[in-house]
Image (cartoon, rainbow, N blue to C red; front, side):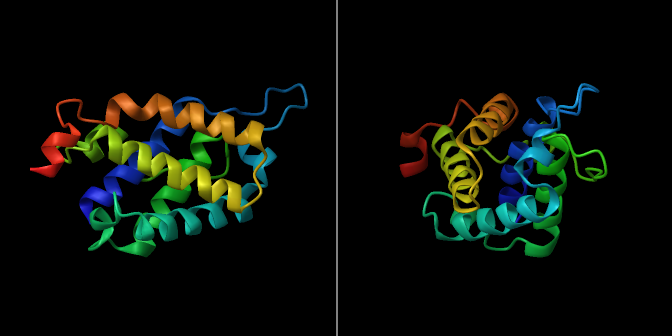
Length: 154
């Protein structure tokens, strides 16, 4: 439960560092451009489903409180993409993922699940690209570079 929670949280938190808020010139946040709360909640639901089917990460989510995790992932995704009416109530990404030994392969699998969830919810390619950049920026806080695929097999 903690491992899955942490992985999602780290990715979502990374989004916050690169959020795109309204700039006073009529430009809307990425959150609003993607469709706001209804679309982001649907994306979060699909991320959960995708993780449950993904053999690389599904075991990290087995004992996770789905309702609580989805709440936190919604909050961090929303805040990271510029929502001004949502507050993130979880830990920072590094703190929430410390000791989880998340591999590059697992990180990439989570990113793929998120990208597929956005595709399923008809998020435009440019907006997906913005989210991908945010996710990629979180990598250093989440991935344990000492964990290799060989380590996972043993």
